[in-house]
Image 1 (spheres, rainbow, N blue to C red):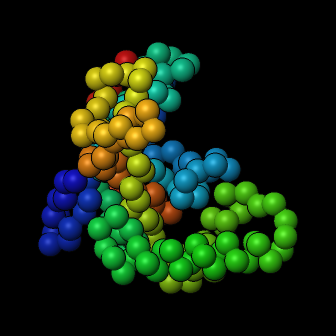
Image 2 (cartoon, one colour):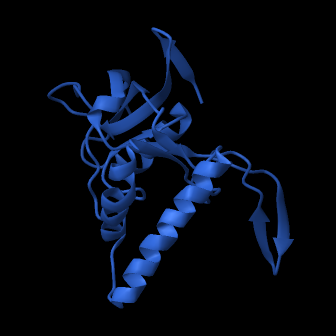
Length: 190
């Protein structure tokens, strides 16, 4: 995870992957507002370019056959860091548990999007939380043998289990105001 200091302010360098656009480069990241977005509506970045490239290869080449990776400096001062900060992690869990309890009391089926809207309205927005750093657990891919997130394995019930020691960390940022110097980093990748 790379950090950069600009005018005595520290920023996290993030990588945003999008489908290659024939009409030109993006001026800003694209908002992810899918109903199944892990951490709700926001601008998603990887903290390692390796995973930004994998995301492009797996999900962003469908229409044009190519993808782009953009870099940006992200102000994470008011982000929850549930990967490396124990207090943030346990606070995040308490908020999620409150959301779960709320929706269970309604005894209705709920969506991931509804849970995140609840969290945004009841916690993140009120507390000035501008994003979340999150560990998106990897797994070794049978279809892509060059992607090994672990070579440490053991057998259990006839199946190989792995110790995944390499983290795939994402940051979701809820506002464009926290994202600076958004630029094309790798263009027209396939």
